[in-house]
Image (cartoon, rainbow, N blue to C red; front, side, top):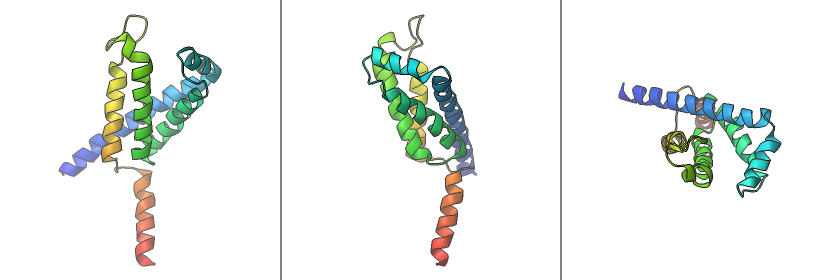
Length: 141
């Protein structure tokens, strides 16, 4: 019973994190990815990284929602959050400066991503279906 509560809680974290990153990535593409490229360059990052970040957010968000490669995806998203905090948000402070939000939400996303990267998330995850079928095939072969 305790394990089921743990998995249910982890499922909620995984899906909400996935939805959030999917939407953030989608907005980057819908708003004109070239604008994000320009912004990356203006803060001293290579512009091409905007494509990588947006792609990780969109594809990674979908992967988290369905539970595919959750640990790897969460580790990648944690790296994105570390970059965002260190390169952009740290200078404006924890709560921000009135013009830009602080890093409080980024820190929460980072914590969730690290939690999932460490612990995984099995409940209602495509991984479980794929690996269960793979393990059943390897034991019968």
